Length: 156
Image (cartoon, one colour):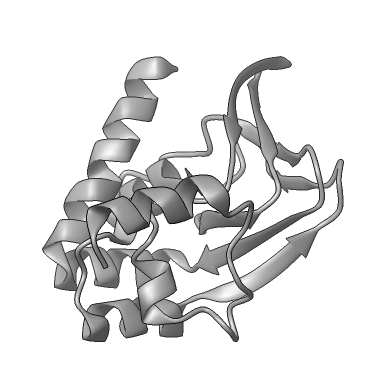
């Protein structure tokens, strides 16, 4: 797809298809996965599971020891620290990359924020071990995830 089509897709779609319907091409519309080849995109889809959340349901809590990485497919989450909203996660955004990457590196970084569904949501869920393996085997993905994590650490 041409970059203009990707941009148009990003701004005209409110959510992505379900995991069962998500194609490698659809996945590559997301900035995190843009530029990946078909094989890598299929590996990423194969590593994911899908979770639905009701509005008000907590996805993760600050200081928790959970290590999954989440990618928002539909809906919106409020990200808070000490009861104050610091961000919103929308379709295409990741949640939990710091804990997923740092845990695998042996640092055991706890969750730095709480994420609560502001609306009904659907997210892709990646187990920590899968995140680390994918980041190692797909260097571009690893670089992007580490960049997101660094950016978020500097914000907190």
